[in-house]
Amino acid sequence: MSSPSPIGRRRGAEADPATDRLPERADVVVVGGGLIGLSIGWRLAEAGLAVAVLEKGRAGDGASLAATGMLAAAAEHEPGGDALLPLALESQRLWHPFRDDLEAASGLTIDYRREGTLVIALGRDEVERLRFRHELQRRAGLDVAWLSGPAVRDREPSLRPTVTAGLFCAEDHQVDPPRVMTALRRALRAAGGRLVEDCAVEALDRAGGRVVGVRTAAGAVRAGTIVLASGAWAGEGSLVPELALPVRPLKGQSLALKTTQRSGRLDHVVWTEQIHMAPKSDGQLIVGATVEEIGFDPTLTAGGLFALLEGARRAFPGIEEMSIEGVWSGFRPTSDDDAPILGEALPGLALAVGHHRNGYLLAPATAAAISELVRGGALPAVAAPFGLGRFARAGSRLQRIP
Image 1 (tube, helix red, strand yellow):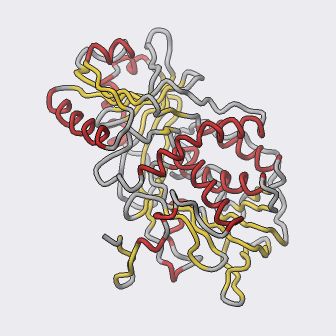
Image 2 (cartoon, one colour):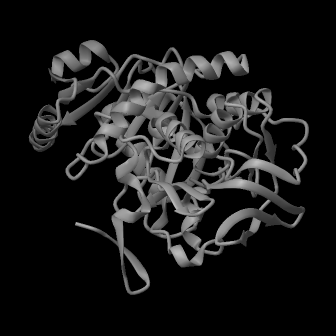
Image 3 (tube, rainbow, N blue to C red):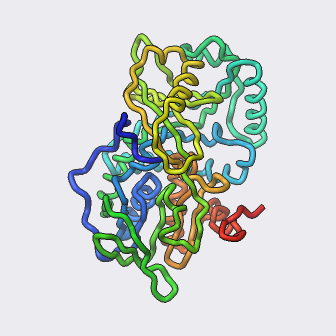
């Protein structure tokens, strides 16, 4: 998602006093300083490689700081998602050591919360659709419990009495994106990696049939491997037009509210059919997010914000007493089949793009997979199905292979 709107900003990652200098050489150059790029860069630097992460703006001001931070393998599972589920569950499992390593490396906490996620129904029609979702989750072997309306309200007394049923996803946890991004910046640098901001990559350098470096306005960098992790912008095609990457922006608007003793609060992430609400330990309640296919248009709209507020109020009346602390829009990096694109695309060029709305969930598995590819020459089995080769060319567009 894009940089927070100037109309109202979510708090960002802690700023460093200066950006690192552009090196002349590196083992690995990562193009894109968001969650995925920094996670990959940190893990590779931790393994002893010379790493430079290049970001065209400020690290995290794309999807990473606009996101909610949900790690929702079960709640996100939907029809057609069976192929992605093994990777999602593996990454959910990896989040525990990833969190421990990140907090130890950075000296910071990332507000990892384990209360679980509630997916709720309001009214008879929604109950039937929730039953369908539960059956889908049950067939997939996910740890999800059906709750009656009173059982939901036992867990979250501030919800409306009209909540008629719910699903409890015990393993669907959450983190706080600004804290994660600050921790990743520190961890990367502590491991010897460089983060160069305001440094747009203008072209790839090639020699002998390989990608061997990048060119920027500040100079060129030679590298053994380039990792493209530029989020929704990866599909623009200016760096590797021959790949025609099937990645596009999917806009979302979100807002932050401030809970008070009078308004009440939530302890779990709560999903309705319209919105999701994620309570943070600092008292913020993040409400997100609209889904808009309108390209790179960051405009905040009355209709979008009204939909968020009305969707939240329908389940949690206490929001009427809360102040609005920030509103923003952003762009999910979405592939044509809503799954990430991972692996080698050209000799010397690896891809880590297209994570849709699952960037935070999939960050540990993505970092592990690309690290294994760079260091060992192949993706792990759980990530292997997500290469660019699953798409076939049809004219000038890539199409999903059935």
